[in-house]
Image 1 (cartoon, rainbow, N blue to C red):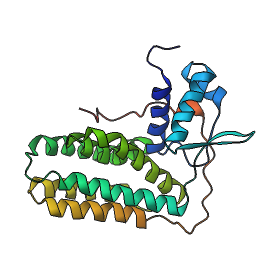
Image 2: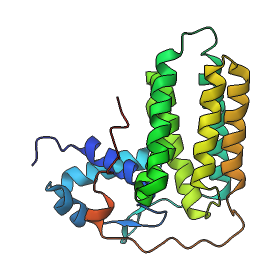
Image 3: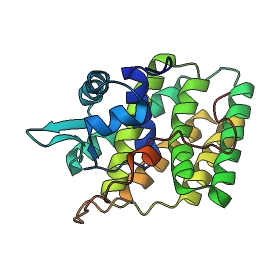
Length: 235
């Protein structure tokens, strides 16, 4: 077994693939294929899948195996609502704090987003746009909320994939930039409102009434390969 592979590491790779929209709702996660992909035992893979099941990302179907969940419209709305509460709270708690370093890190992240929109593959673009929100929590020093927000963002990403979001990548990037500009100007309330508007825009772009069939699963090795970022998005 590779020294750096653990059930938690496998689970995080799956969540990364969801954030990058390389794994879609309804995709099958075969234990044997995962074990071969990570060069580990099926026992370790099963532990990872059970972690993901507890976090609400996968489900096991009797005599069929493990599948990425397909969130209902109600579950999607609940995830977006939770994100509004958490992210507005994070920004509200920044009142009176020195934000110079935070703003620099967020501007670097937005620059990565812009480069990805101009030339990177769709998976990198999707991952960076989703990761902005995790980066915000991280840079604001809310370490206990980083994992919470990553999971919530991954849940809304599944909804966006399933319900065929029409929210453009360029629009998301511009909205991220407006939030950071408001923070830089010291207008925390405006930043909070812009964040709420942004999350609302993403949610409204979902075609929740459409019958959305998940895409056919791509090859597992390509799907679960690490996202090739244009430069380090974590600093």
